[in-house]
Image 1 (spheres, protein in one colour):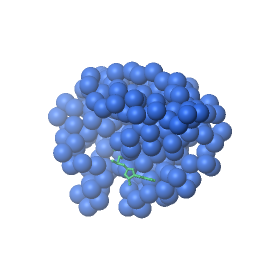
Image 2 (cartoon, rainbow, N blue to C red; image 1 turned 90 degrees about the horizontal axis):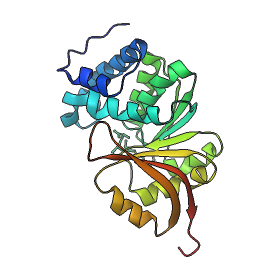
Image 3 (cartoon, rainbow, N blue to C red; image 1 turned 45 degrees about the vertical axis):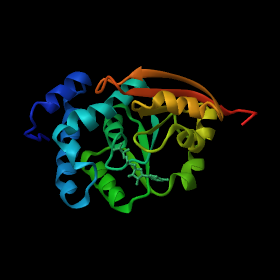
Length: 217
Ligand SMILES: C[S@@+](CC[C@H](N)C(=O)[O-])C[C@H]1O[C@@H](n2cnc3c(N)ncnc32)[C@H](O)[C@@H]1O
């Protein structure tokens, strides 16, 4: 299984930032090639980001796996074109884990299922709205992720039962994280830490280990 994506150094840069095995690289290359093929008709990610898809999307997703490498049961919300969910699924091939992806857009779900089959990633795709299915995952996932989905107060609202019952939240966030944390803290007591993104020094990943609704909110 060898795929030459003919990229411009972006792939090498991404793999320096977030090294993975040769087999995982090859599965990721399959995903990138398929994304480029489907993008023309289905507009899965912003076309402006395709030139550096390996750093902007692949490495950005891989770094989440390095924060919880032993976790086996993952859930990604609002998976879109597969970031981070499909990339995490590809990592889980080697560790024997599984990831559920929740995405309301049927066209994107068709791509997610196709790419999961092609790469052999242990992925289940749910064509659904998060608020309708999130309750099914209580006690069943070690980590929940969501990238570019919603402001923090909404994310915590959706994930509150998971975050109260031991699931780790990993949420990549941009320059407005501090303002989002201030706003969310009006309603939630949050146990959280941050790590700087390896792909963008201005971005951080918020790691939430617990969140309880404030009595005065
Ligand atoms: C901006 S995109 C981000 C996609 C991907 N996570 C990424 O970072 O590239 C947000 C995605 O979340 C999905 N979405 C938004 N609200 C949702 C909801 N309530 N339930 C399920 N999917 C939702 C949208 O269809 C869209 O594909």
